[in-house]
Image 1 (cartoon, one colour):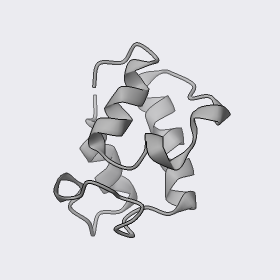
Image 2 (spheres, helix red, strand yellow):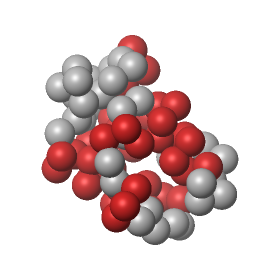
Image 3 (cartoon, helix red, strand yellow):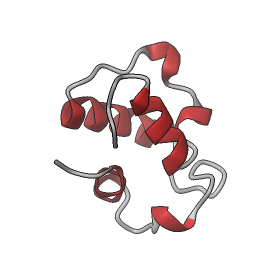
Image 4 (cartoon, helix red, strand yellow):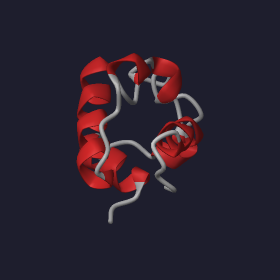
Length: 76
């Protein structure tokens, strides 16, 4: 199973996501990347992230993504 960082690196390999606390403000992810990330997380972890959860604060950094996945019973 891929880690969150592996998935992020697959979307935007040119960035070091472990070094940022705000992927969106740092220009590492845009809205299209967020949709790709949601799709990849859904596929990798066998979940379906609800549309109401696809907001910037749930994808701004690794901790926020882990908290979001935790709501779906995923320990990432």
